[in-house]
Amino acid sequence: MSYSLRFLPEVADDVVAGARWYEERSPGLGADFARMIYARCEEVCREPLACATFAGRYRRALLRRFPYSVYYVVEGDAIVVVGTFHCARRPATISAAVQDRADGRLSPE
Image (cartoon, rainbow, N blue to C red; front, side, top):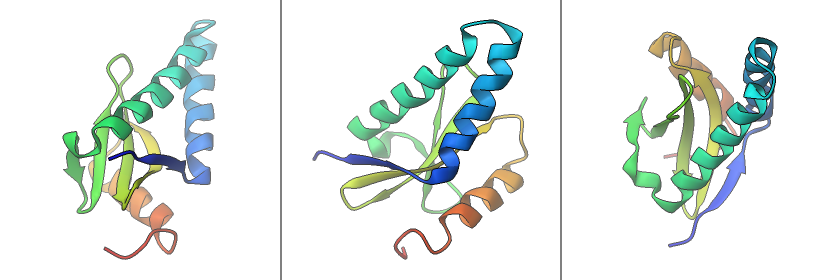
């Protein structure tokens, strides 16, 4: 099955904030971070059920080089990326943010 990839609008803010932080530490690292996020999303499209579940219907795809995860949900033939968060954040905080962002925008389970 082929999956399409969608992003909630807040994901762009997540990526820009992370990239800016890394870019301030080392020129070029912010661009690497952004590329890794989007590359991981493409990998998720190939095998969306390979990643662990998180907070019920959501899934979490870890990045390899950076301590971040991509949070998404599978809706029919679409992968909807809900957010990207640093792994040091409390799971309860991430869960609340993911659910708040998705509330009313995703189809019911």
